[in-house]
Image (tube, rainbow, N blue to C red; front, side, top):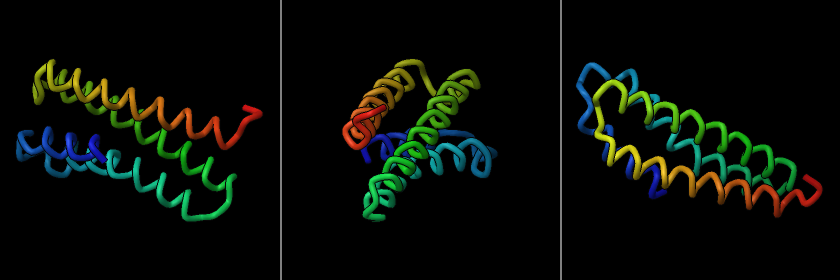
Length: 106
């Protein structure tokens, strides 16, 4: 949830012409991460939960790419992007740990 908040804060300052482009893509990817975790948990099936965690991981990778793109386009400074990428890395580790705990043979 902290990652989603930071993405919304970051994307507030993007140019208006990115409203339906990068802003929308970043926000959608960020919101998808906790949403898929919650949906998978709500399915009450370990395999469904693992599948949704994989989807959340994919959304995280999308978001990381979009943050790097925002930096390259000059929409965000290096310090802000570094902070966001560090938080994304932490979320990725938590997702991997949760997935491993649910699927011990992987």
